[in-house]
Length: 546
Image 1 (tube, helix red, strand yellow):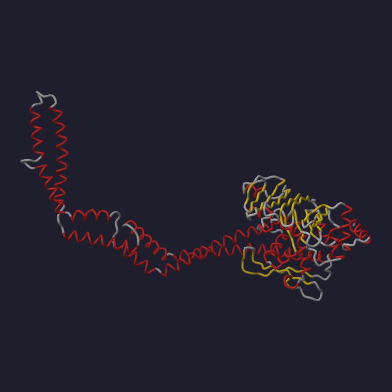
Image 2 (cartoon, rainbow, N blue to C red):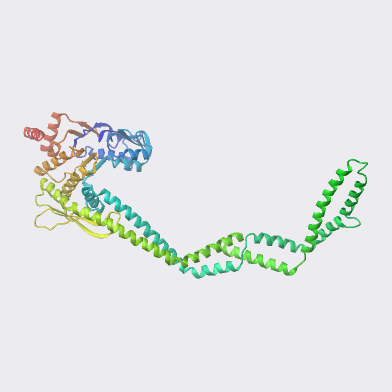
């Protein structure tokens, strides 16, 4: 419920504060007084786009603030999800700076407009003359019928199965596209895989070959230096090893008279062992390394093959070539088994279609059961608002499965007894659409648990007895929810629990609550114009007494 509204520096409003009743709040005022401005300010609190040109004084901020009683509404989870402190008396504030920047707050917590809109959907439903056009929206017609049919559980079940069907169809579509592309590329893939397989790739091969190539290219120089090292180690006349062996023997001869000789002998023996190992390695390398032109050619050719493959496939290293070979091989295997995979996916889609169709049929049955009573209720209310010959029917035409089910919902309408009902959005006049929408809103409001509904001149195009009936319907709505009604009809205005007057003074829009006597005078003006007669005053008192 909307408790209060404060507007500052918006359009023609300098500063405005107004409290609202929990029942029917009537707003009246002359054309141009600023009633639409008030709706614009409320729209800002519901997440509508801000426009800096609407700021009255460009030197300061525009501020719109409202207090809502949200106790009992299913809104706590949404607030907690967005890290907003839940308060039964929730305050929403929107600030527009002169530069056009907008900031929104819920209980002093900054929120994006998307969150503001999501919260606003739980608070207020604004219905204007232009909203009559939503009768041409298939989604509105379907959602209205579903609300009356109370099929939220069945619809949720259907939507879950339809979502599963959508995922299955997408998976099949992607698999078919991949399979088609793979089949187109199969010859190319096979050629690449065979070429890489024939190359007998081995991890680390490039590094090994590059090292061997450097050795083969410098074999003569390497052997010359290794031979010199071997000779220095093991030459019988001047080699290090024979000399050291002689020294070890000499030390052993003096062990009895020189205490350190044993230790020195052992240490030299360790050096000799290490030098012997070096000598053996050098000897092996001298035997292994040879200037081998044939092996050099082979290594060069092999490296050229590997480098060419890397350049061709735009990768670095044999490891990447091996990964690419395995990828091509896997793709070929997938192609060979793609028919099995596609068959499994098509089976899954068929199963999901069957389950979705069954859920859609249960939803259809619930809608069909509710359609006639719903239409009869609409006709009953339409007759009360002066459309005695009105006919209203709801038809369900089977269609392909959509997120809302397998039905195309149509509202057929005829205002005259001699005319067959046709789609309402094609034949109803503006006044007829207003009364039909009021009828639908009055039926839906009881089921949608909306705390506040605002009618912005929904009664345009009606008068007299019909106007009184429209007022009674709006007043009945206000017994279960808060209603704010902007009207030009005295018959409707007289039904309110609180009467608010919008007026312009000195070029500035103001708003105030009328006292009982002021209300009589205001309704009299609505009856007779600026010149209030005693008869108009008496008629106003009569309307209010009713």
